[in-house]
Length: 309
Ligand code: RIB
Ligand code: CA
Picture (cartoon, rainbow, N blue to C red):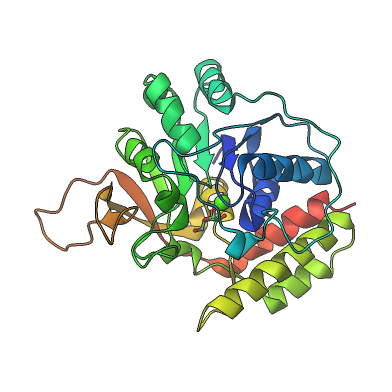
């Protein structure tokens, strides 16, 4: 499979930070765009710059949406800390943003470079705005591979955080009509940073490995403390990258997925049609169903080692 050309739209965020490493190693990373989500936009943008410099990348970083399309901004300090990347001694970045127009960067890049994958791992605000301003993107991009949604929730019993923060944006994305891959919680919870796996990261040399080891430890400790039966931190966001670079590690179920916008108890839910009926709704999304988590984590270790010097 050719190396996918991608734009990573993210809200670093511990697992977004790991997705940046995977994207830098296994894709043609055309740009990083930031979005408000795990933390306010200033923090997620700063954290993206931290990762850019830790990896020694020359990739452009463009600042994106300050808030969702309709809903008020919501953050996840209870998961990622106030900074969005608590738990490690992060080196201050020397890089600065290339623009504060992430949406314009996404549109311009997809119009000048054919076959780009958009890989959003935070709320879908930037992607929805780009699709609204440039409907021609549907026929220009290779597709959208997103982390979000699933067959159960985390921010509420029904809704996953990325979708819950900006359901209107998610509705635009799930109805855009082009190729769409969803790495939902039903998939990402199969892929966990457990203590033995974190110890493998810590065994690597270099500042990046040390920082990522600390970030993964913070993330794992938070997950284990908040859940009844979790042995590690669900490494959500890299799944949306690895399914493009290493599709052989995943299985999919083409399904119809709709976003609930008005439910009192279900706003932000991705309603996945799992009925075994001939009348089932036409699929609009490849729902990732299983991951071979051991070789997938080996890929993360290899990527960290690659950038650790
Ligand atoms: O629900 C998990 C998702 O929300 C991940 O992308 C995490 O980084 C947060 O953005
Ligand atoms: Ca994220």
